[in-house]
Image (tube, rainbow, N blue to C red; front, side, top):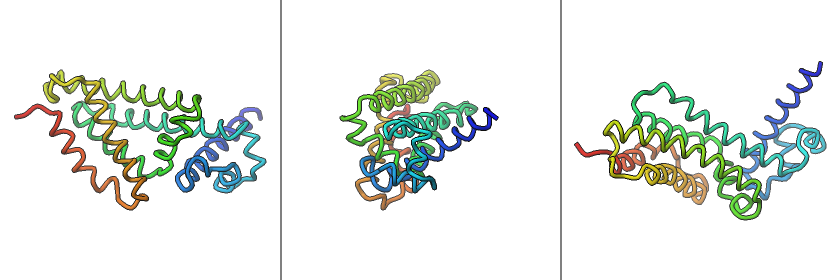
Length: 200
């Protein structure tokens, strides 16, 4: 019996977290009230507090979900031997992931995360640091294989990699999601690789 109750709570927390990310995508993090989140999750507002103490806990769950999803993007390419191909798949899948979840840039680049809430900021920073470390490792592998210019600092190339994704996401938000991220991904990747790969 106890196992079933715990599973039900975990499932409900996931549903609330996904609903919160959806609402944030529509109304921003400040507009994501517990009433809106509850409505999107198909439950009463009071029922939310059976699973989360407050709205900050929901936002923490959202940030944790994003971190886990980024780990999944990395895990999905673990069997690819070519490090540059691995980077390409991560790059494209990352942009596709953002396009499918418009709440992500509205969380990560929100004033709540960047300025107001230290707890959320530290959790986002942890996720980004962990993700960046994995990307940097793959870039170093590509340099050792003679694919990426060895004169380049791998940490700087990592910043270029993630920065390209982030700037593209910010521009997408500012354009009210009117353009497709995946439609320009080939051009973005070609430009990025032209700048970092060794010349034949």
